[in-house]
Image (cartoon, rainbow, N blue to C red; front, side):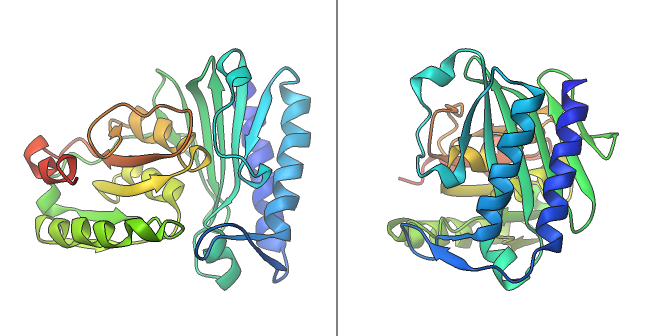
Length: 259
């Protein structure tokens, strides 16, 4: 099966990550927006291997220097890649970091694989077929938000969103058990799919951050939208709100009214 072949590619990419020596760091646009030699090496590896598996597919990767879904990607297959989601974690050896591979079909999420090589946790989903972790089917938590952890991202590359991000986090804190921040959006949504947390939000993430993880979370029963409750576009940057099955609309009403 196609997705099983993607599993092997993701695991091999993860091996590159964990075996890498301390990398040379290169800055991109935005505050604390880093790229390393290992990011570039893994992305090149992913494209080479995935082309062998699905030659007709196009590619959009984080290290391509573009962040907008191209018109040619609306038809057929498109792999959306984040070779290391959590590059700052990777640089400072602060776990986790993950390999994220999303496959869109005619511009819509079709297959998804996210691999955490440090804990050997492989998440996968096919549209309409549920979510799996290391081959076992998983579902998001049905616990209320008040009995759950929540996670958030600070949109660190977009300093204009800093104040609003922490305002929302401050309002969220008394509604849940406690807040966490991992530094990788893909991992956060996988944790929601697994039932470890019941809510994740961030005010701006890129397509490669969510192309795989949003499908993994939604196939596990999460509602994944933008911060105002609209469907994700899968065409470029967006805000993101991912909530598990037990989270009620009234718990997140303040999020949708954040502007």
